[in-house]
Length: 598
Figure 1: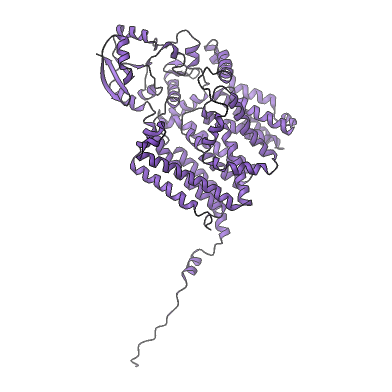
Figure 2: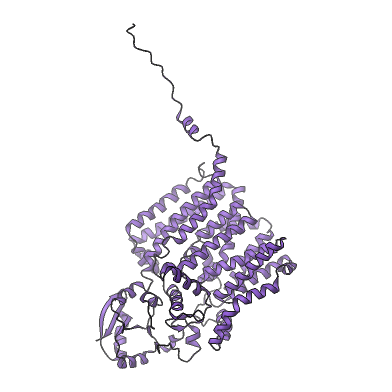
């Protein structure tokens, strides 16, 4: 036996790179990209559902529109009246009823809450994203469809209005459905498919008209007319089943209009003349803006994608406009021109053009990826840098509120510090990614899309939290919660020279709140042009609830029931002088105080 130690045979270890290759099962980059592409539609759908429904009921109802619309739907259930909308127990007939039906049905299924009130808008936004994806995929391709859906979802105005109780998001859904169905039907040779598309189109036009009146048929009608005029395809009209379609449209629209006209004499003339032509041609509704107002709204509302518009416009200048692109251009331009000519302007009026803008932007972006991938990635990096700049601005504003717009100060300074940690992540991650535009990890379009989507979803979650923080200063909730503690069954709640439309919603009022204002403001104080402007004295089944200052002074002296008066602190002295008596302060919140008789 030898005394030498046994010989040890050493086996060389494989390089780390070879181990990684073996674990990767030799999957090629092209295969990985193909797998990712298959998942992208599901990622878009899941992301849309998440950001649209995340904390949907977290913010209090913003005044005045959200509070007003949520309360009208609540009073449908309270009165069990599905024909005449009411606000503060007065008939309100400046808008059709279908949108309130949707909210009232959400209340019946899920209970009365902010979440249920916003559910129709969120569902309509989700439906609009789905329609844009389907339409773009059918006529442009999968890549364009994915980017179209993401662009629409993440444009700032679309996202904000998707989470607000307002008519324009359901209107946008039905107008998008009508215009997409028209274009598909006009190019379809399959008779059965064309019939189904025409049924969808006429049904969508009827629903849009029941949501916001004639605008629901006029806007798509103008787009279709201009398209047929420029393409000289008038023969398409013979393929659209116009006569049966008219019957379908009227069957949807007429029952409610005729019933409400029968209940309220003079309503139909008022609604179709004053509410439509009056708003368009006169400035009596105090919504006058310069002709370029909606251009500015589009630039801000389509943020951050407006940063890509120079690339989009330059691309369209250099190439011929095909049929489908012409249709989209008309879809975007015709409503913009129409509303710009109107005397009455509000930012949300042009929301229906956003689906067309999203597809146009996506189409040009994909062309850029094919022609100059570097320019496309650089353009997308601008959106990330813009997001980081927005967060940085508000982060600085958190410490230096003087730089903030007045309307945002309370919301920004009220945000918790942990939320700003989240904001810093949004600031850092996109900026880091934007400087890696030449990285091999982000060169492929699917990877770039995934990075873009995740970054934007992160930003929208931050935006949602900011909305929740800002809502406390723009809602009736805090004031109503304070008042609720002081109300007995006999108490009459009174608003003196002010009004929060959502107070009835939060108090779950079962009788009118008294509103005290000047004769000059009476006509529009509740946003109720028909009831307050066309009748001598609006009334409720509980009696008079809208008073001028002298009438209230008489009520003060004669009424036996306890009064809880909600008034701005600066108006307290004026109130006491008008009623000729001292008041007792019960509570205060912000600029408001709650008073009763001394």
